[in-house]
Image 1: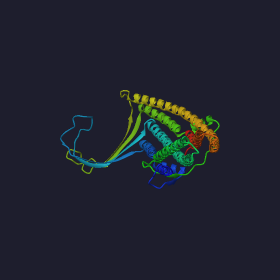
Image 2: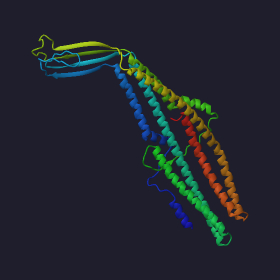
Image 3: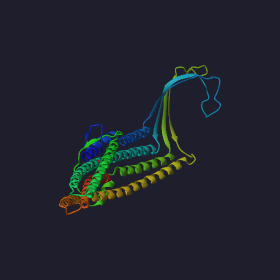
Length: 429
């Protein structure tokens, strides 16, 4: 039976092909920020938003184009349809430049630039929020692996200790000092410990897969993780943390920038109804400007400039509709900001309550473990002296194992809850 138990124990240990790589929590953070697709996508969106600002600012600068034109025409004909224009046709070839410069559009461009800049700042805050969310996922996966490894060790120790007890009682039963009922109880306890080990190993494999995903990899691998120091007690008051979160959470900062960007865009849409003043200039050379029906005294070089004032009069209420739509989007952005404030306040209070409960569980589970170990020692002594039944011993073994699991879970639950509280306040890097 001892050989069968040892063989079963070896089979229940997960086998990984690769050598575990040492990994600290800080190194895991750096790896995730470098590789995780959510972080990289958010960074790309942030950079694209910055380019959008540069694109909007281009309206401040002149537009300069080079032109080369050649044409062949029926010189005896005239244009008879279309927009009003010079109707004369003649052969020509020329080259030159065209300059366009916006002088003023009554404040629309400055408002658009400001809106784009604020939208880019909102995108930057969203990028920070993505980083923090990924780091929190890494923390949770990291502590889940440490917990799963601890559960495997507890299960292994439980199998070993119950195997020893089962072998002892089986030997006593052969010598007619214990009954087969005692043997059956100890074998049930041993089988339960082996089942616990199987489940713990399965949980460890799943935890390593979740950690690999949190690090931005689709390939599951094992790591040799370092334990993190236990953090201190959480703050005594949740309301101070709520106020701190309102100042620090990047999601809320991004929502506020979105409101400001919407305000500037609404102003820009309002400015569509106002006049626009622009300058246009042309210059060039016509080396072949002397067809038979063109005055030969015309100079081959040309230049010209014009200032145009565009005044909107009526366009089917297009500008009014655009302004109203921008106002609705502004109202939606403000409500979105208010919703963020409500959710952040809720998240901080819930995270604080969870961290406080987990912290209090540390001392409670430690005391529970001490009492369970003492009860197991007493139960074993009483059983060997014949003062109690195997049922009492089995119950003491089960209680001691459950206390080990509770104490181990409380430790990593509090570490994860503490990190979640820091995230909800906005303190993570």
